Image (tube, rainbow over all chains, first blue to last red; front, side, top):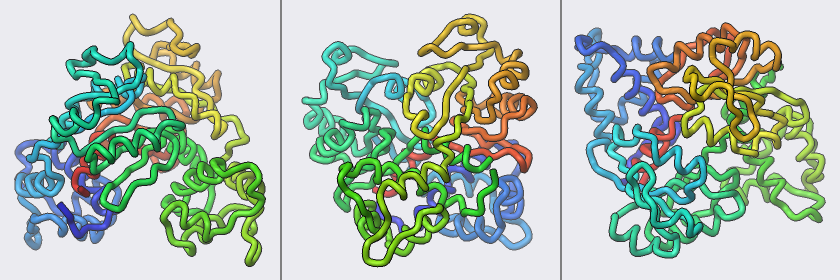
Length: 203
Length: 203
């Protein structure tokens, strides 16, 4: 589904959603000013971001909280089940397999892949670990379009190419290396060490 | 150290650095155009970002590769040793303890903290796990200013407050909740599930 929203705005939508969900249940209305203040952002920016969703704010009242939550969830496809797979069940892959927060966004980690035969065939946190050689049929069976890449840097591109060949449309890459992908495949890169280095530079 | 660079530019510097390090050793010069093309970015943007460092490009030649790498490493404090601690040694905390990539940026994960007595007192990947109650003295002993927060969402703010009280100046937060911190403390948030949801929305 193509949405005409800048990535920089899209990135903030889960932050708004998390904040709104943290509000007391009896808060019927919420204004862009309140959201902006709570999150340390500009009010105009908040209003512009939220305008990409179907939510409609009313002057001097703001948004109906449950409506705004629903609009954000709708925009982020939280109510549509998406199947994801993890590739590489080292320490990080295992940690992500055990992380329960994906279901809030309608995402289910359905399986993992590895090339280490000692890891293949077991279940981790109830999720099966398959041989990467069987990726094509398993990804097709699951209808998975999302993959989380937790393999060492030197294998990342090769594994990404395999996944793309299997029909994966989006890759979240934890390997500290840039992945090349065709235009119809989206890639996001989370480099934990680089993030810490950025913080260190900001002190 | 305060640097007059927008965070959005700062975030890209590790990407340039990783790319430059991936080049063959005999590539003596590298142009902003080449970097831009390899990373799928605009050339003007690349040149502007690199202008924040001490590197000087020459017309029609570009940058001396080793000089540009050195300038980026210098800017990102890769040659200054920074001590970091991890709080919460569940699956994710353990994975990060075992991740070797921090040393490229001059960062050493020196210790971990937890409040679970069964985890305290052991070593994980050679790093000691201390009781969070002892954080103040241990953080001071280590001279740590960086912390990676791997605790469940409901404890994240409480633990962040403890860390800030211990003199931590920068927090990398993996808990899916926003952390409030005073102005002199920088916080970056990595929400793995939200990142996957953003990808899912982009398909």
